[in-house]
Amino acid sequence: MEIEVGEFVRTKSGYIAKLIKYLENTETYMFDEYIQEIQNNRYTCISKNELKKEIVKHSKNLIELIEEGDYINGERVVEVIKGKEDESTYVLHVEALNTYKFVTKKEIKTILTHEQYKQNCYNMNNKNILIKRIEAAKTAKMAIAIALCMPGQKQPEIIINHYSSLDAKKEYYLKAYDDDLCLKANKEIRMLAIAITEADIFVDFQKQVQTLEF
Image (cartoon, rainbow, N blue to C red; front, side, top):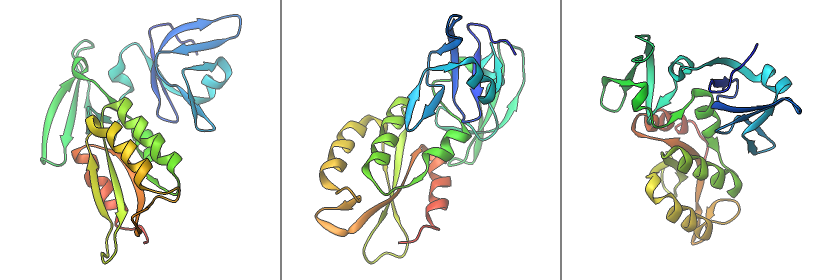
């Protein structure tokens, strides 16, 4: 399987990136975005052999890599309609508004694949996960949802932080919460889970945290 410079690639882990260079002497592909993760470190390069194991599909047309369940500009794709190559259109279901709308490939600003979304919804037990998810949300220009264990409440409380405030929130969380993610001022308040989110992703996240144990 030959991949040309300028093509987009989708991997089993849900990374989508554009090939910008191939180094023949080391048989290494260089991409414009992260293409793999090894021991919590992400890389924009990958060997030819590793890419063969990881690749799901590739195309010069980005829209051909989008799948149902992916999030485009923070909204969930429930159907992909193939139109003309230069005007291919996504049908997006905006769950929070219970409606549909169309988005062309020219309007795509961010992509969060369904594989990456599942990886980005974590039960948290340390600050490293918190920092990693905040940084990923900043890159995607998306918000985060955090589920908190609160005293006297039977269900987790969920708070949303817009991406424009993530730097300030990160600084606050690192100061206000201990290494076990308990609030220093009240140890009964504890972070349970975090997800990269927008309006309709929040609905999915809310359903998942209902099953978390306090």
